[in-house]
Structures are given as structure tokens and as C-alpha cells.
Amino acid sequence: MTRPFWEAPLHTLDRQEWEALCDGCGKCCLHKVEDADSGRIWPTNVACKLLDLKTCRCADYKNRRKFVPDCLRLTPELAATLDWLPETCAYRLRAHGQPLPDWHYLLSGDREAVHAAGASVRGKAISEVLAGPLEQHIDWGDEEPLEVERVEDDDLDDEGAESDHA
Ligand code: SF4
Ligand code: SF4
Image (cartoon, rainbow, N blue to C red; front, side, top):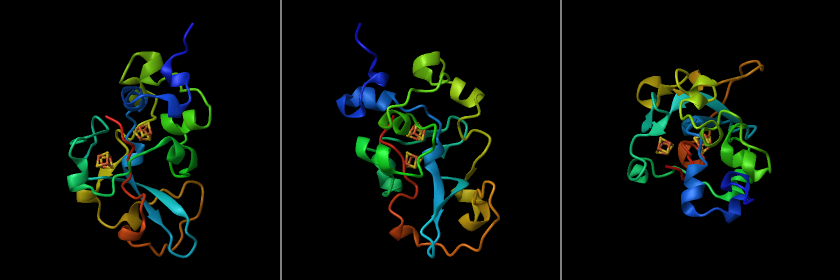
């Protein structure tokens, strides 16, 4: 039996299969802050202005680079090396030879399952249009908040980055 494309190596996927791999979590559309001193990248809950916070999808995916020129085009190589990609990202998982989670719509058949599982940004993010300074929205996890000196956006290639998914 032929294995499904979501179990195949990323570099073997055609364009349609690559696009279909995205789980629609929206996590990679959240801004990040890079500490100018340490180089560490911190996640925030601030979403790119084009992210639809209800669907967790890009509101104008086809033309997005007109409005967000630094929106990243994800590749198999980047999926394997970008540390800031969420651990649940389908591209990251497959780049490391790991299976998709049960809630992924390709397995569950349900596009809402990613939200029901709490694996998307639905209900957890604020648009950059309303958020104010990113430093006030850093997710510190279990760590003590720090004074972060931020790298300018133009120098942070991956900020506002998104995969090349539909
Ligand atoms: S980061 Fe890119 S894909 Fe995500 S909402 Fe913004 S423009 Fe769209
Ligand atoms: S590229 Fe990854 S992190 Fe971004 S929405 Fe798709 S699955 Fe989620």
C-alpha cells in the first residue's frame, strides 16, 4: 500500500501536498522579539495584521507579501532548522520524521480539531493593530521576565514569518 503524503519525506511532496500539510494553527503568524544582547527569540501573542483571529488563517494569503514583505516562505530545510517554529507545526514534525498529531485535519478529517485541541492561536492572540509594543506581550513561559533590548524588525528576518501554505 502506498503511504500517504503526510508520512513521506518533505522534499518529495508536490506543491499541493506541501500546502495541504499546514494544520492552520496560525502560531507562526505571531510576532517574535529577538533580544539584541542574547540573540534569544521570544514568542509573543501578537498576531500579524493579516491573520484572521477567528479562522487562524491569513486573510489575504495570495497577496500577503504586498502587505507583509517579510512573510517567510517555508522550505523543508527551514522546517528542519528554525527553532522558533512551534513544536506542533506539521512541517517541523515531518522535517524531524515525527508523525502528525491525532487532531491534524488530515488524520481527524476535521478542520476544527486543531482549535478544539487548543493547538491554535484562536482566543489567545491579539492583532498587532491593537497590541502596542511587542515587549509588553512576550510569553516568558516559566522564566522570570527580563529587560529585553529588541533587535529592529528589519534585522529580524524571520519575524512575522509564515509558511507557504494556503
Ligand atoms: S505572517 Fe504571513 S501568512 Fe501569516 S497572516 Fe501574516 S502575511 Fe499572512
Ligand atoms: S506553518 Fe506550521 S505553525 Fe504555521 S500555521 Fe502551518 S502548521 Fe501551524
